[in-house]
Length: 270
Image 1 (cartoon, helix red, strand yellow):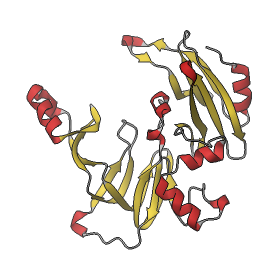
Image 2: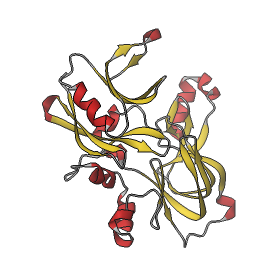
Image 3: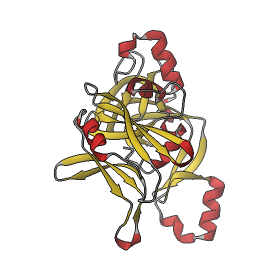
Image 4: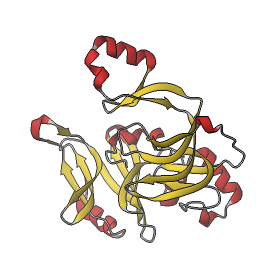
């Protein structure tokens, strides 16, 4: 481990945040808090918690700080020359950390935020917005709430019988869902979802599980569609974000964090 804690604290302080570096520990009942970056909380408030194994060859450095945006770009160097980048910042009500996809030209906060935009969002923004408007949460091209982007679909016609009410959308990793007043799904793969399997099981996988473990029927399963094209309208709410109201249908797209290998080291997602 080669981490200059004082230097990290100085840089995080520039965006009004606290940071701590702590070792991996085994908690009660042998539950392990593994290495990674989390958002911790104590009596003073939230802080960035970087957890490392004492024998791990890793260093963390801040490569760009944008105090007015309250964002910074953190670079991790691991064994074998592996480099990972994380966008750390404040979004509406809470601090967040987000792994950035491994792409060329990501040298600062702005390029990291651009890389996290889905391709469709980035193209529409570049075609229709001035540069200073492209990263705002609300603009003419899209509305963003956390990791979700809502892009206007003015020509969409939906059969009222295929509209779901008060439906959740989730990345499938067990985080807190965003709740949508009206939702319409097209295509995708039918899956069964529960707390034990937040990413969903295909119908064949679900049937095999039930046959092998009949008690699994009691796990409060819900039918969902994975990788569907999703549209929402009305109120979209989440406890960590301001509610957005979409008067017409918008296509739902998720940010590109899942494309980053470093996303496995991000513990706090929502």
